[in-house]
Length: 267
Image 1 (cartoon, helix red, strand yellow):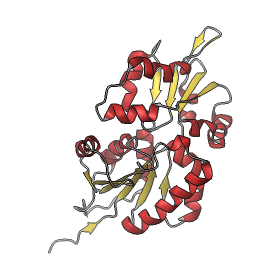
Image 2 (spheres, rainbow, N blue to C red; image 1 turned 180 degrees about the horizontal axis):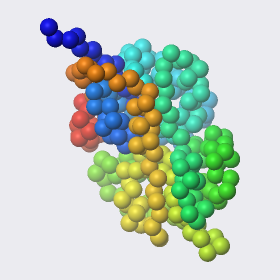
Image 3 (cartoon, rainbow, N blue to C red; image 1 turned 30 degrees about the horizontal axis):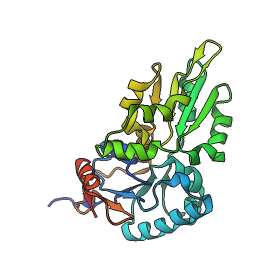
């Protein structure tokens, strides 16, 4: 007689656009037995320009529907702008759900820097958040931390990963402020505090005035999620998951093809 098998609840990965695919890619490696649902709030993208209260209400409303519809094991908020704004409110609104957040990797940057000069490349929303300032206060007081809020990089990363051309000059204009020289020391770590940015890391490396460590938090987020998701020995990977849902309901052909490349059907 064969032992009964358990069909597992899926892992839900949420982002404003397609940046959270950097986190999904790592999470799948660590949780191969789980199905994944990728939710892109492309109808609300980009989050940088939103008024905070309106964005908070939007995201909490979205999660009310998503949790009811999909009943996930855990939700990964793969978006610094969203989580630094609404993480505490989500946990308060849905206490039965486990949320794994994405916050700027300021603590590991402060531990790793040799020059003491660290830059945080983020969206304007993440830069102005008290949450980000608190991380610096708690973990990086001994460092000189420059916060660089890019208006355009998330949009550029979306275009870049879909295969559109992005000009070197335009990218350099967004990242050049990250490079600081002070007291014969130079910036040696740039924290990628938006999940869209790692898709452009090779471009950043090529354009940088000197080599730095570009810190991508995706693997650390995935490791954290793995610790919160129970491993079940006789689990069967569910057939009805591994899809992407877009709040616009109408992703373009390039986006659907991209999702296919990540092993996701589009709904």
